[in-house]
Image 1 (cartoon, rainbow, N blue to C red):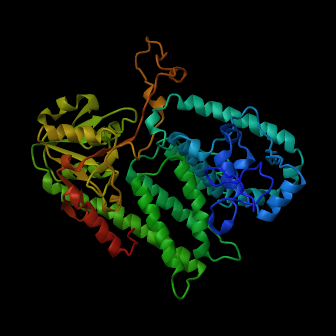
Image 2: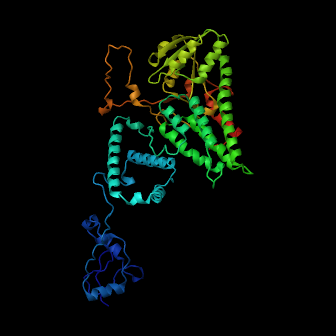
Image 3: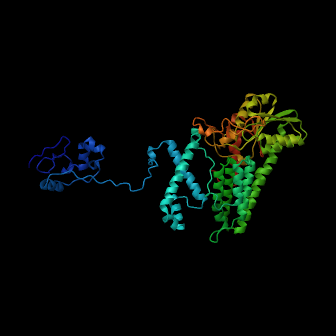
Length: 527
């Protein structure tokens, strides 16, 4: 037997007359061609993506002998790469893979997908894009075939205009707050909605209904009307169809203005009530389910909001004495009730109302307190330290009390609480227990609501001699100028003395205990 020269790696020499391997491999098998090509292929072939480096099956000794005896080995032709036959729009940049995207690009893509999903749910379509497209194709088979090309051109032009408008709006936004939702609506979301919900959304967007209590009561009363007017289809029961019917209404309200934390708690409670009706054994009839759900909503408003405010007023009266100078910020319905009730009790006190732009909610509170005969003063937030010179107590409302004892309230509340704490003035927060949320937040940037920045630009002057031209009228055309109008802030628990609730006077750090007790009492699922 002839000795066949082999390479130092034990690979047979291709110039040898026979294909018998002299490799020291186990069982005398030749090394696979993929292993040979991986080590012996040049760098140029690797860069070009040559198929020689791809994994292939090992060549058997018999095939190797036949190939060497018949004709010299020739390199195989590279496999043809499948071309992308999808039409590519030259105006649009090619889509990147997710691993090539930055965090901001991935976040923007996820927000876009989430918004498209909400629009599909609001329109009564399936959540998946593929199922929604198939359903639309079944509904309008002619529209999907006839006139396809012109529709595609119009859609592409509309997308380009939307992208330009979005880029122009984002150039004036604060970059680290792009994750916050901007109010947006579409005609698809308003389809088949109850007229009362559309009217409520308009009031919310125009800030005609402000305050967490007022918004929660208005939302629950409208939902009660929607439940009363709803008639399920013949093949479904009311108890199982009502939640599906309410989901587009909730999505619409959420899109037109982000819900406060207390409103989210109310919706979570309402969904739990609907789930309990479904689990009833024996099952309830449609009329019984409707009546029970409406009664539960009325009971929640009466017990957790109306009566709770009355108990908070009674508990708060214990801390107000003759000669007190009370400072309050903006407008809170429960604080207003407390001050009016204090006046009815004959207690001699003064009130200082601190207010801020752009809503100036304190003016409405000031008007009602003055009408009741209460001695009042009015300051802006920028002069808070001047207002605190004669103050003995600070009483404010809250939109939510977080699990770590922090207060989530109107923007500027934390500044008032910090200034009062600096002057050793006690800070009291009036808050109902339904506003206690199982959420922890240490800053105002993770979760917040963006207001319209144009509200900070438009100022009204009483002097008719001055021109109405505003120096910031064209602020969106200046790429280096950004206006920020956030609506809420977070006050740390160390600046709060006590919280006045319907269950008594408690420290703010007891919020998780109260939340847990109420969840166990009302049978809610604690996450």
